[in-house]
Length: 273
Length: 249
Image 1 (spheres, rainbow over the protein chains, first blue to last red):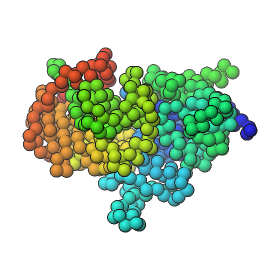
Image 2: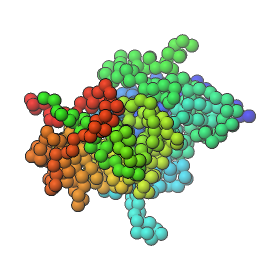
Image 3: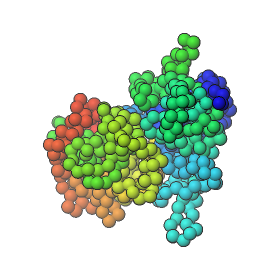
Image 4: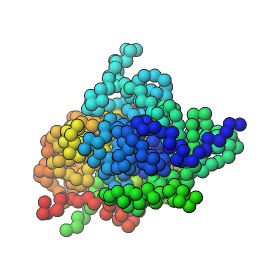
């Protein structure tokens, strides 16, 4: 029996050094590691690289707080009826952050290269798009002579993959309900994996249906249990998007950001502890 | 004046009309109107087709219609989860029949810009990015996009940035439906309260309009299906689609 990997959120987050690259799980407002993201802000992290096919709230609030140096992303929006991610948009337009624009699948290809242990990975499509030239992606002929040519995406190895999960075992096995988004490939491509979970489930329950486990414990470095940690996003089937909270987050002002951070479930929990 | 056929319904209904029997159809993130179109097609048309979506759903039976088109409720009732890597791979290996992809600008070839207004490196507006577009548009059998604004700044002669090539098989706006013909967008139909002249005046690229005419009004079943999806008109209000810009403009 291995020892528990469960530690407090603050301790988990403190493992991230300034300048780290972070692959964040989930998609838009759904099952993102948002309590972790807010803790990055509270700890004053700087110069982070954010890697995610479809970031939204997470990249937006990190840009707003000045934590980001660079991002690699496929599509960035708040979604719902909120449209563009305003603080991210301003950060790109003012060149406060560097953007490497991907298609979602090209970012996945780079992560697959890392997971597969190869320096690059072919990616279907992309023909005619200006993105390959923008990013310096090479097109190679099929060495086996079909005459097809394919773009190859260089390896992307995040320092950390950070996943918000429904359930974890004390040893760090990870279960998610509903779609896994890109969490699986992120967990296989990163150097280290950090997990924030809604709740603990017994090791026996994991053993009874191991095929439901998305990430086995030996890939996981540390786990923090934060109920409602994906707020203001959803975590199916536990809770839906808190749209009023997203709306309240959007207006300008340091006080607005501070109030939002203070209203977060992990902050409320700490206040009551 | 209130239109007999609201421009919101015009877009959703005409998007649904691209769905064909026995095909695999996909709707993604940031795609409320295509999500409604796929659900409308399920309710209004007698044929079978497979509806997959970015929430992992495969022919889901959602208990409610979400604001976010990637909401996990869109996997409710699904007997499997077909996740993001799965549907991209399905598309790149050539087995996605129809996918709906967003666009900020569309040109006469049906190519799209979803990246920036102005130069990419010095953007006036940084847009969301294409998401699946650059990979899915050239590899899907057919891709269809929609714009809630039909103007010379959205239907352009030249894109500010070429996010995704390959060419849309269909484009639906509040006043027009375009389809691909001989590698270019051609007008198929216009809103019954619009006209060919208006579509030409509000489109910066040239297009063939041979055979085009006013669109067929929604059938009773199409109207009923959309009403059942949006009984209180919330989606219609949120979308804020207009046939024309305000007269003052």
